[in-house]
Length: 592
Image (tube, rainbow, N blue to C red; front, side, top):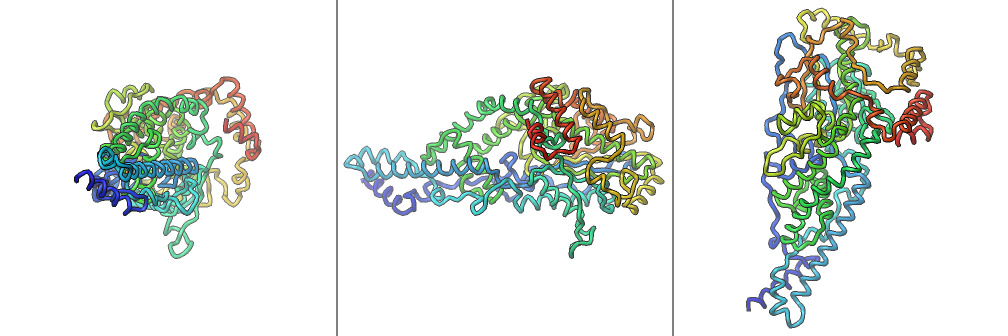
């Protein structure tokens, strides 16, 4: 009777569901532990983790104020910020991949249902061997039959979702609260310089941040919005924020190391697939599991949904899959190879020039508009190299020594061992790294007053002329001999990057009067090269933190074929100098 009753129960369950699947009670939904009321999985989906979920997972609430500096005379004078764009839709390429795996998933479910039906209602063997075999079968969850992709109704192009805009808007509000004396000045495009890459999700993030940062400061609408400028370098030759796309040697390195990444990930995906098979009966390949994990991350980030695709995985499997993601980040974007972060030279140079220029303007009695904030909005591939140059998120003290010598670091340890390099902490959506510059001079009171007075005359730009006469600035080619000479010399940039410390050597300011505070995701962090100090002396920051990673030249490091790439770089620079960026030849040379 027992076998016959089992056959009858299986048949009834098959008939009761749309695809002939067992009831949800027979395949229990996996409940994840919560962190501050949020599902566990939301803070363990690597770089797909939303910013607020990443903050919750890190524990303590965000500090409302900056930490107290070591001396009372120290005052913040400038903010350098690099932020990853906010939460977004998948790109077209990823969406196509995910639609394919959804079809595979539904096909596997239907195949399993047919197999269960055949065993349950087959010929005379059903009451004996058939029933026994049906007892070993599992049925997939009911949601698979009617599953709809998270972006249904619009074409995904990798653009910001509303939650991503809110991440940037809130970030701006909090930074303005922390640095009121620096970030509450009258807007001027040279006082607050806002940069975004030409990728829409990054430039839109810059806009969302700017809206929050300048809201109430302007005259537009009831909220008194302020119009502002967002600066972008040409996408195909952007060395400051998209160096991962403009460095041919890195592209070759990434392609060569992808098999190594897969060799580390495939065992995790295969083991997870075997577990899913035993729980649900779904027969999935390792690549299917990897794609379903990606779909789970998209669901969680866009829909805040964890009870469909994500429910295929247990908590232990989520930790293993997160580690597999972090391996890829380590090898291709982090400490796994020196080129991953050495190619960020232009970004480091930009940071140093910004800091030293602002200090010279602040302390040197200049009539120029001091730069109080340089705000950059880019990608995970931009922020992770910066973190590596700062020496953050290393696993051991030995790693710090190896990284300082630009040696490849070992893989982060797998669960259950703790690790520092986690994508959900290092580069979630909206991740941001800030460098706050402090002036600690004893006698800067009069200079402060002079600086404050400058904000009243916003018509004077860095060139010392009235901004009404800006036809040269709009063309981007000031017509003076120093500019032309600089562009000509740029054609032959084969030496090392020159340090930006000329104004220090000229005696206008002194390095030991300034400190640098680093923060990641709005929390203070210590840079190893600063020998345990939270506030790092500027000279130490320039020489020991960034200096070791600024040797050589971008062109030499990124060249694939020596003289042939040199010729390409020479032509790209020359065509840019002539102002014909729109020519197809220019864009072609900049992209190869």
